[in-house]
Length: 405
Image 1 (cartoon, helix red, strand yellow):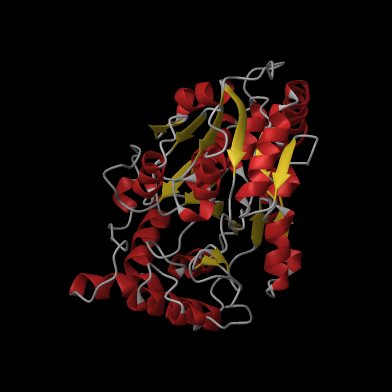
Image 2 (cartoon, rainbow, N blue to C red):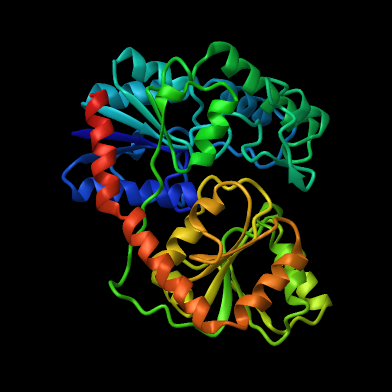
C-alpha cells in the first residue's frame, strides 16, 4: 500500500510534526510505502521526493510588499501546490492520502487534485484551524470562540493574527473562501481526531459526525516495567508561548523556592519568561533549551513530575502521553482534551486553567505525598500501555485505510 503523507513542514517543528514522523515510521515498519509531500526548507529531513515539494514562503511577518501579496494569494489557493502534486501523482501510484497541517504554506487547493484522481483522503486534526482563523481558539490572552457560526470578521476586529490587521484580514478571507467552496467538506473522506474534545468541537460547529472518528495519538512506551521513582525536579517541556500558561507556572514557583523547575523548549516569548525569572531572583528555575530524542527522554525520566499548565484548548496532550510512557505523574490544567488523559488523583492532578494559586496548591499537595505521586506515575504508565500503544493504533488506522480504499 502506498500512502502519501502531506504536511507543510518536513522537519521536527512541533507536536504535529512529531506525530507525522512517528506515524511515517510506524507505517514503514509495517511494510507500507510512505511518500512525503511538503514545503521546501533547509531544515527538512533528506528525501528523494524533495523535487516535488512546494517553494518556501515566509508568513511570520505581515506586510505589503509584492512578496507579501504573493504569500497571501498562496494562502488562499496555491496553483504551484496543485502543479507539483500532479507531477508527483504522474510518477507515483498512490492508494491513499493522509494529510496533516496543510494550511497557508500548501493550502487545500491540493484536495481537488487528489479527488480528481479518486484517491481517498484522511485528515488528522491537529488543531482548530477548520473552525478558528488562527488555529487556537485563543486571543488577547484568553480562550475565544467569537468566530462561531461563521463570524470570522472577529479575527480582524481583534487582530487575532500576529496582532496585525493585514494578516487578520488574510486569515478572515481564507476562512470565508474555503467555507464557501466547501473545499474541506466536499473532499475529505475521514477526519481523525486525537480526542473526544476535538470531535465534539467539530460536530458543535456543524461538521458531519459520520465522517469523524476519535483515535488518540500513540507513543513509544519506552522501557517495560519502568520504575516511576520520583526524580529531583519538576519538568516543563514544550514551546515557550503565552498559550501554554508558562507564566502561571513561574508565578507559582515564586512561592516554591525550595523546589526545582526545569524548563525545556524555545519560543517567541522566551525572553519574557527569562526576564521574569531574573527579576524575581528565582534561582530554582533553570532553562535548558530545546531537547529532543534521548536527551528529552532522559529529562522526563529524571523528573518527579511533569507540568502542563496550558491556558488554551489542547487537542490532545502529546507532552502528557510522552510523560505517561515514562511513568511520570502529570500536573495539568483542566482545559480542552487534557482531562481525557489526566484523571485527577489517578494519573495526575488537575488545576483550574489560568489560576496560578490553584496550581501552587496542587504542587504543594502532591509534594507532601511522594508515595501517592509515585502510585499515580505507575497508573499513568499503565494507562499509556493500555490506551496509547502503537500496535493498537496501527490496527485501528489500517482498518480505516482499508475501508476507504
